[in-house]
Length: 474
Image 1 (cartoon, one colour):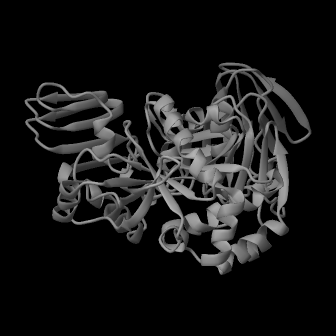
Image 2: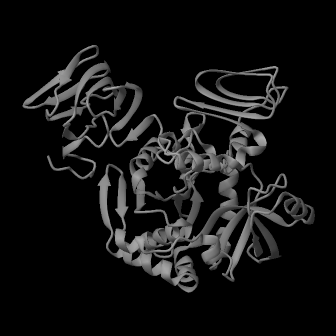
Image 3: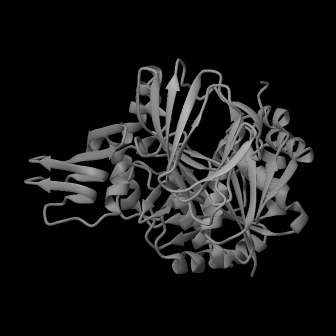
């Protein structure tokens, strides 16, 4: 049985600030060991037999491509010009898969943690007969406590194919209502995972959300493609897609549709939707403390510490979440975990840059980390992937000093092209055309000291760029 996995890579993960931010949402953050949730999702779906199709934001295209490569896979990425929720994202996937005929599509969020991929695969196979018969199959998680953070699915009558009919979808209930649902029985957490034939979902979208389907169909009719290694980037036509309204697949299709089946999943599952959920992934000591990294809980109870970069000590605390990053610190009561998204809104309204952007910023060629800055200077650590290059560029307002600390750099400076090894350095004057390239097989790392009257990222005049970023006029 061949199934095409479709991984929905949208979502900003604001409840996991400050680790998850707009520039690097939670699906790209290594939250489980040294792997991101997206990479774990791709690895979990490798049994499907077909390359994965990812639906992602244009701004995250290289983050997605990196995770596909790290998973040792190949696939396609459909790049949304803007977020339009899951109904549009799934419509794009159906339109991309139309050439595969009556393919079975398995839609999975990119930011869930399911530690038993074998059990998950067996559950999906249990729903295949219903999907082949024309039903939209969803997979509900057997609840372990009365959560008010999840929607619920009420199971109806049994079907001949082994699944059950969906009696109704229930919005996220209040705590008392959630407890009543569990007492009543027959309900599952709505995990937002679906198995369906491409033709079935196409017909359902045309019936229940014809405007969304039409906008996506128009956008994909004029889509462009670009191949980078083993990954194909698909760009829908922007104007048509931007005209599409935003609505979730639950409201647009699942609730009004008359043939929706559900299969229970008995295994461990988490949507990693809050810092309490992240904390639960770590083992607890006798006092209920959970520590990741360099945290120390002394005379503390039920305290979670995330401290990957430096020692963080909690002394005499109780029921706290402490999340430390190089440029922002969160301290919250555990019963306020769901309100972290309100913190992000507050910081955004105050124009605090850390609301959306990390100190370490991912780039298609690697990354940079803003180590220090002051009046008329800034210091960055820069990492360049093997074989990658920054754009050919110049700056009107700043000069740069480069010091190689790992690997080998090929430097273009005006008419010169030369190599720098570890512990060697060079100087780029204001206005000089330059490029940095990594010709080696290991990551290049260097320290860059910028000096000048203006040090903003918009003082980059790109003359040539291999990553499709628009060159700016000189």
